[in-house]
Image (cartoon, rainbow, N blue to C red; front, side):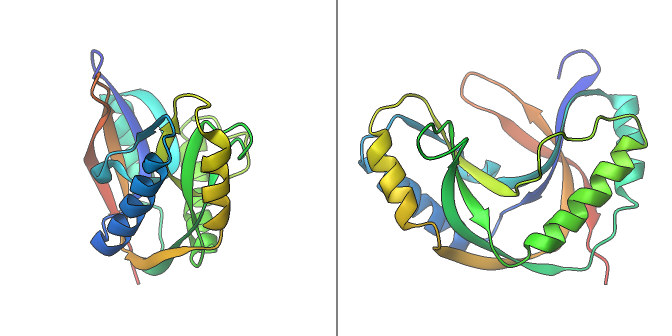
Length: 190
């Protein structure tokens, strides 16, 4: 928190222990290849819908009101496939992807973008590509081996869970990594 500004984002959190264990196992295998990777902490694994940046407390109240208007039913979301941004040849981020449920995530994203644009937030200029960042690539060490490993898992299903909420989160940065906390939760509605 800087002054009365809070670094924040909107996400779907991944809390299914079975899926998290499979993702962690994959990360352990990646790390054993000797790559220079910084894994994302288990409790910080999520699908980012919108990064807001540093927002005043008053503005966050407006965001909360806008998010309360986002509606979606509970739905199944499959965590499937692996890859890297910007691509496997020049990777900066390692991710796991979305299979079943992708279109529902996109609808929530579109509602969120529209609601926040009406508050004056800029629309995202890049195409929405829902994913879960699982590691940051610190150097090119063992890049070819990592790319080959990820390529073999491009169609791997890590499991499916039911999305029951979307969260407005606070991110506090520290030398040991970010700490996230939930500020507001939008429940799924049938």
